[in-house]
Length: 259
Length: 298
Image (cartoon, rainbow over all chains, first blue to last red; front, side, top):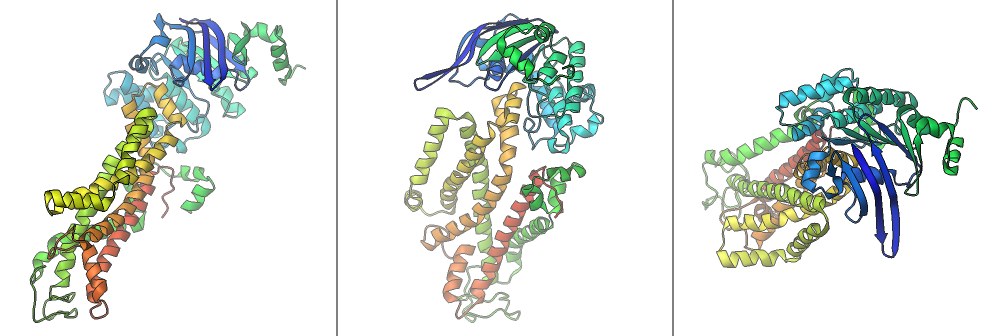
């Protein structure tokens, strides 16, 4: 469904060239979850932005991204607007800043839906309510009329997820969606993502530097360091038999109950 | 309390409040509500009351030059050095001043906000060109511009409006552009884009509402400065022509006569000041009303 081959992203500043992503290749099938782990600056977020066509204009991109038969890197801005949100969607890291503080939650969600599908306001509202219900928000009707600051962090992250899933995308990008949340809420969000993935048969790319979360959710893991993929393996393999020295150190840094 | 909440980031305290519309929040700001009514009364008075006075704004009452305020001869606010009725002149002057203020604030909000938001959001070369154009307009000496207009097209009230309208949106566009620059890299704008929202809609739905607080405040600052600009132009003979008048002109004349006739200064000044204060409080109330995070306990 998604095939990334030899993707390189570089930035040139005066004489220096920074390779943010270096020769990245992977494939993803529907319903699959890929985890990308790595420290800050290892190129995780750049990869996600490339998949959404949101890289800065001065980025030098090489390679190919094919998503459902479309060469993503050759899309025009107009075509992108049809893809973003509808086919590829994204959950942001910080639920506190990713919602517009001046608009009610209902306005923001319904806006997305009406943009992508020719729906009447009432129909869009009904779908939104249904989606909020799916992400387990207790009183969706009242939430629609509230502003973001009136919801708690976990609630806002669920609203972000609902917003990303409104148009039933086939690929969901999650950029550290649990980093800003405490452990119990994070566990709920993970369970929710799993459940929604099963229902909608989405593929998920899950970026995190939390190995525990990745272990729970992903079938495959890529370990990235300085723009390169050091190791790619099935999750269980990676945790049992890490091949690369960096991965071993990463795992050693993890606190585990059984040691 | 509101200040405290904002300063210490105690935003969660307002979570207890149910959602309310902007108008409901505005109503809770008592000073703003009172100012809105007072401004309504002032505007109605300016439009209606001159018809009820026995005098007109241009006729001279030779028997009553510098007459003090009294009920007896119908000069309720007294008369000026030419025996003209101050009451009627104040109200007629109010028509001009309020009209100028309304026009300038509309121009500054409509053109200034859309121009600034567009330039800031698009950025790059477009932004450079748009803002350099604003710089050029800024660098034109305003007096030169006004005099040029008057010499080419003759003296007319509408030219005064054009001259003031042409400069009033420049500051606003700069302010809104600056706000937009800081807003456009916020995550919720990125989120809107990821969800496929089009650029015009991002500007209109996400950027502009977020600048409204500052826009409201700045508009209330524009109004007084515009009223003063108008009186300055009139003083130089480029604006309103005698016998027609405005608050700025009346205050200017009143200040010259205040040692003999305090009423020629006080009455127009009271009207001007109350209008300006009303604008200020309404702006304050609007800012609170448009900011959903604000705890409306005033």
